[in-house]
Image 1: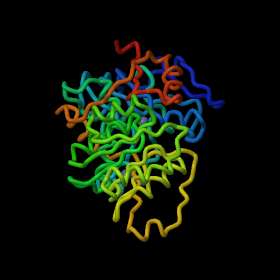
Image 2 (image 1 turned 90 degrees about the vertical axis):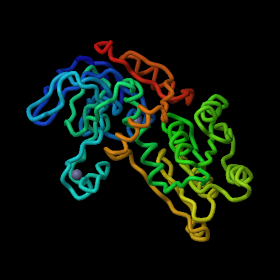
Image 3 (image 1 turned 135 degrees about the vertical axis):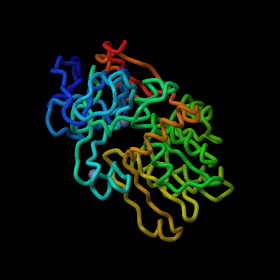
Length: 344
Ligand SMILES: [Zn+2]
Ligand SMILES: [Zn+2]
């Protein structure tokens, strides 16, 4: 099968590899769409390292069960989205429904194990979420990362209806956080780095938009947020950019008892004096991906039409370089997907 792999020297190229065979409890999924994510850039830049090179990229896949291994109840032909975090199902965290924090299984498809930027991907049956007909494959692919992350981050934030939420960064995740937070009854202020992204956020539920270009100084943001909130500040600040400057600005934008939600990151550190948290009883909430239930809920929202994934373009598998460079130039409005030719 064709697969897009990252090599030891961090180059990315299409290769012909052996199609994997499903073992006990696993299924082979024919990939119909695979999302291209900002996290892929972290892998291509060497910040996130696979267990072994070369590794097939791609942690956002959706498709059809091609072949079920022994002990698998899902039939061939079932439409599924692939939850990329492998989990044991038996540790204390898994039993609490926190599969993203599983303490026994470190594998994650497309992060440290072969992922879904390929004609086929292998996954345990418990990682496959069955798709309703109303959810198409590109949408489903994006829900397995950005969509479920948006649902999880909003849950973890403790956001309540009537509160104000700032969403900093209108990329693939941010545009979905805007929607989930607005559906939860919050007034959403989006912070975008271009007029195009600002328009997209307004179209998807942001009540107010602040445009801060890359050259602009984030130190102006707390003042802008305060003037947009009658001097109060934001109850929740969703941070999807993660530079030192944006994180500091986010914490300084909070209302008393506000929550700074750390989801996006770069290679930069957060450095702030604790008094800035203490005096307003602010909290730092961190979120990593999502639980298996969050994925189901994201799929249910998409099926109901309350979560809409803006698709910014689709590429053949070997178009990965074009998709990654568009992402790096920060010009993508929504999410790009790869469509393996075998799926067409
Ligand atoms: Zn992703
Ligand atoms: Zn576990």
